[in-house]
Amino acid sequence: MSYLESVESKNQLIAVWSKIVAEQHGEISDDDGVSRMWADSPFGFWNAVTLTNADISADALKDQLGRAAEFMRGRQNAGFLWVFEDLITPEARDELLLAAGAAGLGLAFSGYGMAGDIDIPEPSHPELEMRRVESEDDLVAFGQINGQAYGLPDEVGRGAVAGSRLLRDSYAYIGYRDDRPVACAATVSGPDSIFLALVATLPEETRRGYGEAVTRKAIYEGSRHTGHHRVVLQATEAGRPVYERIGYTVNSPVRFLSLVQS
Image (cartoon, rainbow, N blue to C red; front, side, top):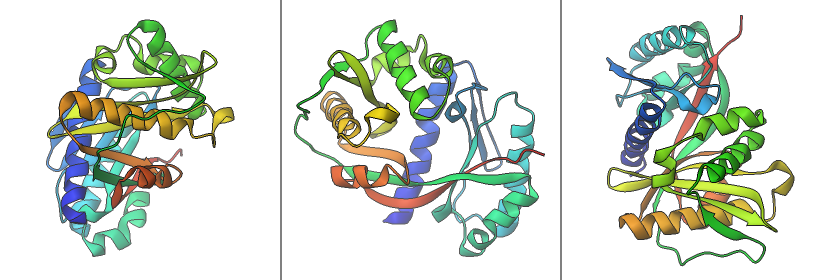
C-alpha cells in the first residue's frame, strides 16, 4: 500500500502544483521522467521539479538529477527538486545524496508523503475564529502568515498568493485570535481527493493548537464541499505528528533537494 500511496502522492503534487503554477503564468513541462512546475517566484515552494517515473534505477536517477539541476540553474529564483524515495530502487536510494552532489544538488530538508481517508467533525478552537479566504485582504493575511512561518519577508509571502483566484475558490481558512490572524491552511481539489497545502502558524504562536485547528477546518470544509474524503499532503518532519493525530499515515520519505551555491 505504501508504494501505491507514494505514486498517488507524487501524482497529486503534479496535478495541484500545475494548477498553482499555471495561475502564476509559470512553466509546466515534462521531459523523459522529469516534471517541471516552476513559477520562478521568490516563494521557493512555487518552484518545483519532481521525477515522474517509478522504480527509477541508479543510472536513470543520475541522468534525471543532472537534467533537473541543469533546468534549475537556468532559472532566476531558487526552488526544490522533490524526490519520493519509495519511487526509486533500493540501489538508487543508497546513492541518492552522492548522485545529487555530483549534479550540484544538496539536501535542503526532508519530509514525508502522507495520505488518509479522513472523516472528521466540524472543528473548533476556544481561542480562534475561523474565516474563509474570500478577499484580497484575506490573501494578504494568508500570505504574510506563510512568509513569516518560513522566515521570508512579508512581501514574498504576500506575493505568493496575491490575486489568487485558485486560493479563493479552494477551501483556504485563517484562524484569528482576538481579530489577529495567527494560523492558516488550505485544501485544493485534486483528482479524486483534496490536497492539503500552505499550513502555517506565526512563529510566536506555535504550540497552542492553532495550526492543527485551522488544518482540520480546511480539511472538513474541503471534504464537505467536494465529497472527497481522501486527503493527500507532503509534510515536514515537524508537521508529521500533527497530521498523524488527524488520521494521516506516512508513505514515502521525500527529499527536497536544492542547488548548492558554488
